[in-house]
Image (cartoon, rainbow, N blue to C red; front, side, top):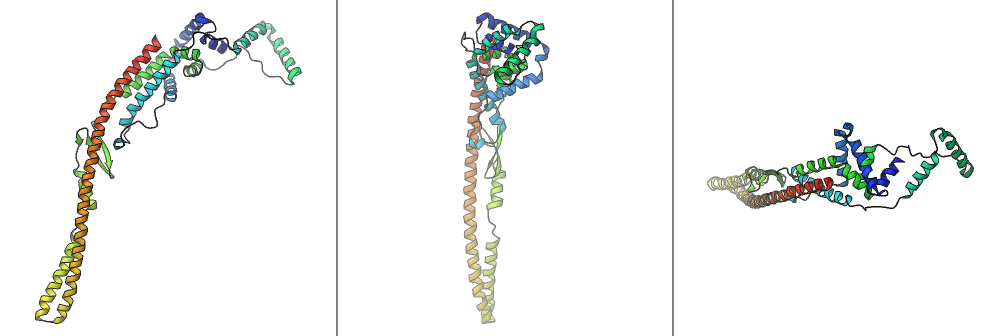
Length: 331
């Protein structure tokens, strides 16, 4: 039932004195060294991650996708902005509120509880009344019953649905929330890399803000895998040359050699012509592919340059959000 009084004070049922008393008691509790440990800091950080979740994927150009060092700082800035908005909403509750039904139940419980020596008899009387009225006895709640660990309740209130309890919890958790804000702002302020590796047509290419760092390896890979060899053409020429030789020898020696030489010339010439056309077409495609790769690399470099500007803006916004959170919680 102490939890009921906590919520009633936070909701303004007992006015400013009640809220001030709750705030004072929480401050005394949180001053204990046990409340300040790494595990508790981690719980608040995890709570904020759930409340101020980052988008499914930070907005970076498709040319730069897949680089955590580019997306994570933007995600941190987004989460910090969401945290600021949530805290500012939570710090504007109604000044007072009507007593909820559970407060009346608490008062009735306190009045009817009796002196310590009377408790066993009163509990037995309640059980008998329940058996007579309902046919079964259930546990009777006591104002001394635990509602849960204090820190767990405080974290639950910080981003809960009850405005008064939320404001009290946010102000009580100021050191953890400002610590989370500092961490997110620091992650948002990490300088972006000057170079990144992007994959263009399956080939890794390093790009800078000013343009591609080097395309030599990528162009060599295209040449090696796509350009056709001249060997089939040479084989066709060799066959045609052999046919010419047969005709030359046959003119002086035998008509049979001439008969064999003509088909060899025709076949060799046909192979040479077809393979040459294939090679020249492949060479043209290779040049086109290299041009496309250069264009995409330059596009990635422009995207990296724009990303630097976006990161500077996000870092500045994150610093402003962090300062606003501290100012709101410490006001």
